[in-house]
Length: 601
Image (cartoon, rainbow, N blue to C red):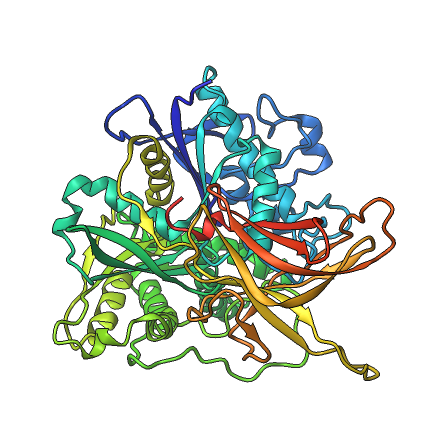
C-alpha cells in the first residue's frame, strides 16, 4: 500500500514530538500531531509535545487504574505530562533522560536499571525498554488520530543525536521496530533535521541567505546532549548546494546540566532557611528546577518562580519550604556558566580525574558550551578559511529549547562574532518554533524523498576501522598490540562499494570470537586500507564489539581462514563488511547501520 504521509519523530531527551505532511500535496504543509497523555489522575488531554518522562505507578495506583491510557494496561509506565510533573515528588519512580542512558556504554543498556538508584520495590526498565515505551506511546497516538493510515505503512523519519555511536543507534532502531515503526524507517541526525526545517521555511529562497563557501554552524543544545554540525555551502553546475563537513563528538552537556546548576544555586537558599537536603530531596529539587527553568526561559515566562520542597522537621510550617528565584538571575547563571566568553583557540577544560567515580551518566567535565564550539571549529574549519582574502562567513542555526532565552542566543552570537574579527554571524531560522524544528525537519526530509528537493550531502560522517590483533610472542598479563584498518573512509557515499587493499587477515570462524570496530570523526585523511599502528586516545573511538560465531562451512574443520575485506554501503545506509576467503569462494558478512551518518540518504 502506498504511503499517505511523511512522518517525522523527534525522540527528545526532555520532550518528544511527531510531525507529518501529506505526500499527495505539492507543498510540504507540515503539521504537529497532538498527543493524548495523562495529565492528572482520571484526566487525559492532547498536547503538542510528549514529555519524555516515565512514571512507574505503585500497587495502589495500578489497582485504581487512574493513570492508565484507554488501550494500555494499568501496569504500563505513565508517559508524558503527569510523569514529568510528579518527578519532583516521586523521583525514585520516575525515569528521566532515557535517551542519554541509551548512549551510555558503561552500563548494560538492555538491563532493568532505571530509575537509577531506585529501591527493589520499584519494577525498573532498561534504557531500551524505556525508549520503546515512549515510541509506542507516539505510535498509539498516531493510530488514534489516523486509523486509516497505519504508521508501519508511512515514510517515517526518526531523529537521533549526531553524536550517537553505532551501538546507541542500533539500540534506538531495536526499540523503534519493537514499538511499531516500519522496517525501512529512516534515522536522521537532529542537527540535519534542524537544517531541513530551515530549508522548508525558506523554500526556494534559501539561496538568498547564503553564498558559496559560507558555513552553517548548527548548535543543537537538547536536554541531555549538545550536538555540533558544520555544513558548507558549495556550488555545483552553477547552483548552490549543501555539504555536511563535520559532526562533533558526543557531548553530554545540555539542559540537564543547567537544571543541576540551578538546583545547586537554589539549594543554598533552602539551606539559608534551615533545610539541608537529603539525597531524594536533592533529586526532587533537580526536577523542580527543570520545570522552573522551562517556565522562566519561555518567551512569555514569569518574572519569578516558586520552588517548594517537603520539609523533614515538625518545626517547618505546613511541612514545606518555599524559595523564589528570578528570571534575570537564572538567565545570568546559565549565560556565564554555560556560554562564557572565550578566545577562538579555547579548548574544553578537563581538570583532574578522580580515581573513584560513581557509575552514572558521564556528563562533560567542562560545561562551557562555547569552549566546545571553539574546539570543534578549530578542528574542522579548512585552513583557507582564515587566510583567504574572502574568508567564509559563518551563519548560526540554533536548536533546542534553551535558546528560547534571548540572553543565551545573544551570548553565543557575540562569542562567535569575536572569533571572526567582529563580523557578526547571521542567525538562520526562527526562535518561535525551536521545540518543533527537529520533528518538522524530519517530516520535510521524508517528504522530499518523494517530491525532490535540496539534500545535505557528505557521505559518512566518520571513518570506520576494524581492529586486527597482531601476531607475536605472548607476554603474561598483556594483550597483543592492535592495529586498525580503515574499511570505510570519511565521506563514503551510499550505493558504493570498495575493495580494501591490505594484506591477508586471519578470520576466526566456527567458534565465538570478538570483532572490534572503531570510528573517527577527526581522521578525514585516511583512505580505505590505511593501517594505523598507533593513535591518540581521542583520535579513534571504539564501539561496542560484536561477539558472535561466524558459520563454518559443512565438512570443514579449519577455524582460521585467510581473507580480504570488501566494503559496501547500501542505498539504505547499511554498511556491510564482507570477508572473502583467499582460498575458495567462501565469504562472511558483518554489518551495522550507518545511514544516520550519511547526508544524502
